[in-house]
Length: 344
Ligand code: NAD
Ligand code: TYD
Image (cartoon, rainbow, N blue to C red; front, side, top):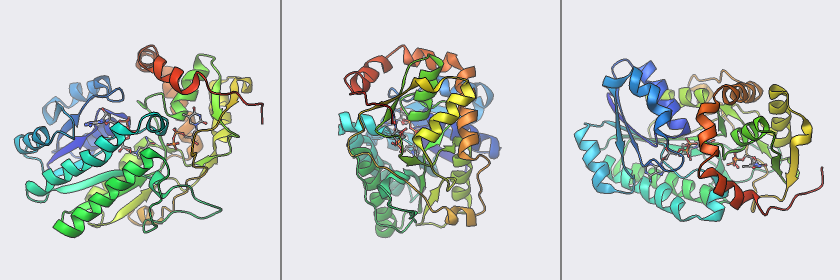
């Protein structure tokens, strides 16, 4: 692993991973390939460019553009591809699934083809716990479970997982897949629930809790997720998938209580609103396989939420311009006409 292509590296997890791997591997050269959609932001990588200039290269491009992908793989002498590039927000996928099918499915196929054409390059796919769908009772998802996605976002990510596996079986492409639980931390676009609620709270705007707020998620700190991905690149078994999460879920209302307390904001900001269509009530990962590989998280979900709240409190320069821009129209389209519910 000397020349790594990190697609989607200007997004939330990607930019954290770029920092992580440049710090861990003194000789690695990183090429970020990113379309710079609303979620991809060069300011996420400004410090990387300053601190690691000689080992960091940025290409603006679409992973659906095979010519541009292949030109980059060839010119940068790439030996490893890690695919973070995706459309990632469930609520946007409900409004308009088209870009999800394009980028998450077709774009992954284009990258797999490039990996195959250039001599079967090492390929790691960043997937999500959402591919398993809603998990009943006390069960946890294990890596060999059947995929049962229920939102357009989850369906597109599950399709990509199937293509990655098919390229391993058919062409012997050296692949691994990781399925992460909900990540939180610095540089997450404030459409996702934790940064949305933190930034709303900091502006004393209501926090729109979908339905009864009893849905369960495993909120893991992004640096822990990055460490696990790096470990899979070093020691993962080719052809295998790995769940990544703390293994501890909490309800959305419990998450809200923690962040309000950390920011010293009142519970009166909580506003229950009409539920998300097809809302998955619970995700829950069995993480024994990644633990057995030698990884463990540094942050509990509560520590991750508190640390994230402090980062947004201290880094208004990053999120205020986002909230003042395109985000306003997005917010109106998702929340504007949404019915308010009585307190639960
Ligand atoms: P993000 O939305 O913050 O960033 C996505 C990045 O991909 C952006 O930089 C965007 O510009 C880029 N991109 C989008 N379409 C592209 C295209 N066609 N070509 C090139 N670049 C494109 O997403 P994130 O939260 O950082 O998620 C990264 C990956 O991790 C995704 O694959 C996502 O499915 C997966 N994942 C996310 C979470 C989470 O909680 N955020 C959890 C598990 C897995
Ligand atoms: P989200 O961050 O969109 O991630 P996921 O892909 O896991 O759905 O949402 C996390 C949880 O928070 C999920 O149960 C939906 C809920 N949620 C709200 O209650 N209100 C909101 O405004 C948003 C965006 C999410």
